[in-house]
Structure formats: C-alpha cells, structure tokens
Length: 359
View 1 (tube, rainbow, N blue to C red):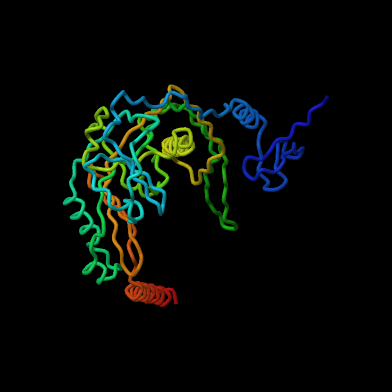
View 2 (view 1 turned 90 degrees about the horizontal axis):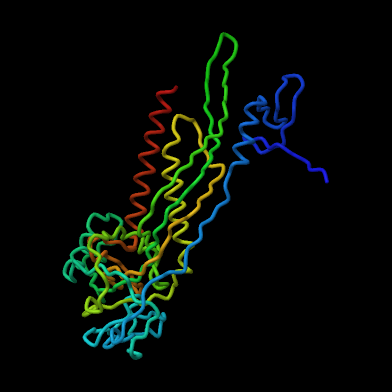
C-alpha cells in the first residue's frame, strides 16, 4: 500500500509544495519559502520527537501502627460534608470550612497514615493579627467591614497534602521568528525569518504539593504556599492535640493530574526562559516523561478564619508556618465607582494632551 506524504508549513500549517520558479519548497498560503536542507532538518527534528509519559507508581503512604488511632475522633459537618479529625480535647463546635455546627460521629479510622507533618509555628493570636493586616491598605474595602467586622470562628487545621517527587525529562520545540526592517528611497521592507527551536533536558522535582481535601479550595491552598519542608518531622499523633486534621477525600491517584500539570508548567517555563533573541516564540510541541517518581502523604498547618457581613460568609486561610494570609474581601461599590471615574478622567486628560501635541 502506498503512503501519501504531506509537508505542513510550520508558519501557517498549510500544505507546502516544490516551486519550480524559486527551486524551493513554498507555501501557497503565506508565501514562506524553505530550501531543501532546512526542510530536511525540520523533518528529522519532528521524527525525533519522543512520546510523552507522565505515569506514577503505586507506592503511596504508610500504614497506621497498632493503637496509634486510639483517642482520635471524626467530626462530620452535616451541611458541607466536611470531615475533620481531632482528639478528645478538640473543641469542634463548628465546621472550619463553612462555619456550620459539626457533630462527633465516632472513632477515627483512616486508610493511610501521614508520612510527615509540619507543626504549627504560629498561634491563634498571630492569625488574628494577620487578618487585621490583610485588611490594611485595601482602599476598595468597605470601611464598615473593617471597623465592625469580627471573627466568627478560627480553627487550626492540618490540611492533607500529597507530595510528588519526580525526575522530568523533556523535549520542547518552539516556532520562533526574527523580524528585520529596512528601507530605500522607494519602499519599506520587512523580512521575517522563521526558526524551529528545540530544547531538551531534565529537571528534578521534590515534594510538589497537591491539596488532598475537596473542601479546601485548591487556589486558596496554593496561594498560601510555599511551606518550608525543613520544619517537617515524621508524623506523630501528638501533633494533632488541640487542632483539627482534615481527613483526605481526594486520593493520590486523583491528584496525579494536578501534579502533572504543575510539573509540566514549571518545566515548560524553565525551558522557555532559555529561548531568547527572537521577536516571537510560540510553543509548537512539548513532551514530558517522568521517572524515579514517588508520592508521600503529609499534613500542613493552616489557620482557617471565617467572618460574616451582610449575610455573606468570608473565609480566609493563613499558612500556620509562615503567616501568609489570603482570602476574598467584599467590594465597596461606591468607592469602586469613584475610583473608576477618577481613572477614566485621568486617561481622558492624557489622551487630550497627546491629541493637542499631535495637532
């Protein structure tokens, strides 16, 4: 059986063919020309591309030792389904996720034992102070919210994270251009040169975190990163005393896609930073292959603060190790309108001045 071979233009994707007048391959759509040696090199580069493989092993987490789960209790929120773990000293009167009351269901029974835990370094007082600082300087925040707002609930929660280690071998190719301008007495000229730029190499990743709780917003948890793993210790149940520990309900298997996305993005960003000296650069293809990969299970410290205002609940999260605070805030619509009008007026004045100067 014969096979039809079609060459695609790397600039516009159109089918290119040999042009007898210029003795080169030429795209009839964008008029880009390729000499045969360049096209041969391009073809060999495409054939050398490697298939992607971002697979992970099944060796995840450890097992609980006999008697280690005694004294641990599970608290269930009947409103959002949140499931947190504490001990008999935990004052679990409300859900740290939605603020509604929770009830104790019974003895804790978990599938996997955490490998590591980063103990809380900052206390409840520090969390309250951080929230006040978070309000400071927000000009579009309603003044009454800052003046009258009070914290409805504050909880120290150990949030489950899956930590992904891997070596990433990658090949990334780019379509790039350089543009040259010149002119003579009759015409202005522009020459666009097209390049196929390739990068290959490997990057090591350690402890790429993925939130293992569906109740915790991934964007919120990633916003309070990074956690400094130098403070991590081997897990002991004693660290849970006086705190809550969110029980993972997103498995490591379900978290792999997010880990792969973070690894891919970081790899492509690192490779892209080495492609310089071009006017435009677009990613043409990317292949990432993982090896020496493993997954660990850890608990990271997070303070969850909830406030209410005008029948709306606002949830804030603070990194219990570093103090980084994040959370959404209400908008003063009147202040926003005044700000917008001021900016619009300033832009109009600048535009008028530019117009007068060009007259």
